[in-house]
Length: 233
Image (cartoon, rainbow, N blue to C red):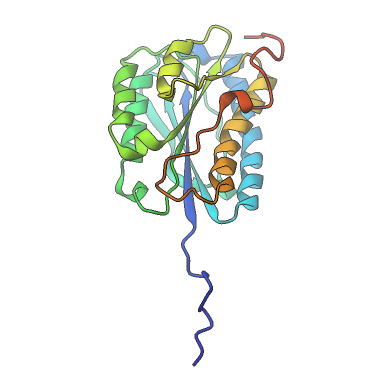
């Protein structure tokens, strides 16, 4: 009998791209900032779905980690972007960013993240960058594992008073800079760019394979400059 599957890859497992949103929900993010962040996140998800459809060989999986007085995972298990729904977050308390990054590092180091079909994860940090704990310990934890070191780290600095030095340290790359969002409209565009560009970059090169060094997106290639829009925060 002829093997009709010869030459076909119908049984080939899809490549996985894990996107982790790490959200600052401390007191400094309360009010208009948190409301705009929830709005921006909901606007970014359809764009992620559209890009995922265009790159059907990659399964985009989403998680959400929040931090204030404690670290909480509103979405702890990876959810396919097709069925992912953003639940509104509220702000209050301290800013345990370091503890959140340690939790994310542990998640990236989990056995299920090590397979050959996993692209470098994307970690999007949304914060004003004012931690109340040892953020260096969290960055060190990320750097301690292969997946943590390979992760594409994209910080979005929220507000004109954001601590850019802390967010720069999170990137771990001297030539890249945090994306800045000082108003709601810019935050929407930044989130859309951060949530979709790594997938496009990862699939654009035929030479990139799961487990290879990531194609890191350049922040200054996003559609807007830092100064665009009125400073309302």
